[in-house]
Structures are given as structure tokens and as C-alpha cells.
Image (cartoon, rainbow, N blue to C red):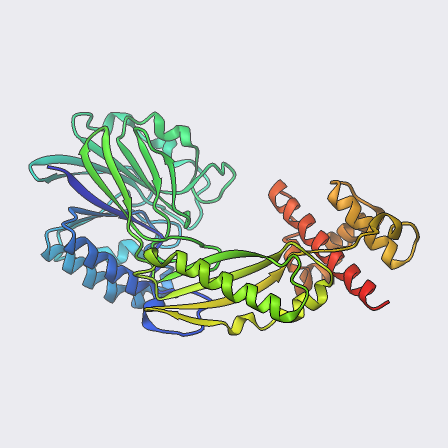
Length: 426
């Protein structure tokens, strides 16, 4: 008979989702923990596996202790085991909380103080081995897989690893690991914590999964969020299903405003596409109480400044779809100004020429003396570095390729906007 494991992590008990206009109890992570517990009981789950950062921080102890204890007790009454490791956020508080559950024998905390630890459970007359490692400190710059001993793996039975850390970021301060580390362990599956975005790193043996945060906490955490259920038919036959339990969902929607040259056309386009997109997700929203959009206006437009003005009140958008409230958090105008004589405008030394030269250079992946000076000022002048208007450029001490591209895109957008506005005033 198959064994069912519900896997999740990064719940951050004590936190609530940000950017919600209508505050209510379900936007707190403790409500999602209760839903996870109820789902496990109602769907005959055998083990709940928690991959760290279950509690947000040590100062959340009193907020977390009640919901956590209540959930553990319910799972215990349903004869559901809990296997758990600590992450960087709860390395100190989670062991304390679990030690206080002295009467609950179903909760198994693994790997305290940064040592690998095993726990073998007998479920449905089958043995299954869990091997876990927990954060010993807030920061841990070593690779925990370097101390993993493959000889502790029971090759005769299904083995599941639990570890919290940063896969693929070898300079990370949060237990840096590489994908290849997991392939050398002879394990059947690895369940990971730390990354809030769900990601399946390997679908073959061993299965390697970041279940992500089951509760979307910020607009950066877009798309479906919820725990995963692993149905173990055999060592090499593991079925995987995500259960969308997050009460909040964030989405980014691009809206093409090309040819929408009056306010009514822009408004109609935004409202109709918002409704269509939200309605297309209806089948996935049965547990979602808040669907929050970031809008990005793209395409080509004659007057970027006016387009921004027409779109400035989109945050007042409010739609009810059954039990789901649909709102807009912010609207960013990334449309390109329709400027037909750019090469001609670039001939000269006035501000219009400088902006046109900058746009042409950015589109070609080149630079100008103006852009070079702007970047130098941004990196060296403290008042500029701390000014909110420069925040979209990112941090001046980081220069990854991805951030560099985002920076150039923002500069291109702003040059287009300012040039369009200047030309409209002539």
C-alpha cells in the first residue's frame, strides 16, 4: 500500500501576507498551517515533513507556540507522524517549541546542532527512513552535504532526506549546496527548504524538491503556492502533486497599450484583461481569498506621461469573484514612447539629444558618457544611493548580469518617458 507524505516548509509562523487591502484572519500564516493540518487528516496523509523556517523568528515564539502545538496534537490524534528540521530563521526557536511538546510522540526533530540524524518509521507495515540536518546558527557558510555519510542510508527501504539550504549559490551564507550533492547519496528523495518559490530540481531518482512556501507572503512570490503530497508506491515510483492551499495569490499581468490613445480605451483594456485573466484562473482559486495583481503596461504609446496619469488609480480596482477578492497593488508603465525621428533627435547637445542618444545606445547594448556618469554618481554619491527614486536601479554594490539587465531596462523606460514628455510640451 502506498505511503503519503505531505511536504512543506518556509511557513514563517507569525507573519502575514503583504499588500492586502482587506485585512482578515486568513492572511496570517497560522491559518494556512491549520489548513495543512486539516488537509493531512482528511486525506489520509501518513507523514507531514517540514523543511525548516516553520517559525519566522525567535521573537515569534508566543505567536507560534499555540498554533503549532494545536496542529501537532491534532496530527497525533490522527496518528500522523511529523518529521521536521530547522532553518536559518527558526534554528533556535523551533527546537525549543518542539521540546515543549513532551507528551506528543509523533513529532521527530532531526539534525539538531548541524548533525545528520536518522529516524525510521514503520507505516502500513513498511519501513521508511528519514534523514535530516538542521541549522545550528543563523548563518552557516559550509555545505552540510560535505558531512553526509552515505553509509547511514538504509538501501532496503525508502529513504527521504530533509535539509534547509541554498542550492546553486556556493557563496551563500545559508548552507550552500549543489545539485550534484544529492545524486551521490543513494537516497530516494530530498525535500528542501529556504527557497519560497516551488521548484522541482530533479524528477528522477533521487527526486529533489523545493516545495516552497505554502503561503504566499509578498508580491515577489507569484503563482500557485501550497504543500506537495508525495505518494510513495516504491523506491523508484514516487507520485507528486501540489495542493494549492495559499489564501493569497500574487500575479503579474502585462497589458499591451499600443494604439490605446485615449483614457477610455486604456481603462477598458485594463479592466477587461484583468477580468479575463482572473476568470481564466477560476479553477485554481477555490482556496484563494485574495488575488493581487501587479500590472505592467507595455507596447508603444504616443505619450508615456499621459498613459501613466490614466493608469494611476488602478489600485482602486476591486472585483469579487465568488469568495476571491481581486485587487491591484501597483501599475508600472514600461511602454516604449512612439518617437519616429529618434536618429534626428540624437543630433545635438541639448537634453532631448542626450536622451535620444541614451535610448539608441541602450537598445544596442552600448553606453554613452551621460549613462556612464549616471552610473558613477549612483555608485559613489551617498545621497543618490539612498534616494527612493533610485531604488529601482537596485543595490549599487551588486552587479549580476540579471540585475544589470533590469537596470538598463529601467533606464531605457525612464529615458523614453522623459523624452516623450518633453516632446509633448513642444
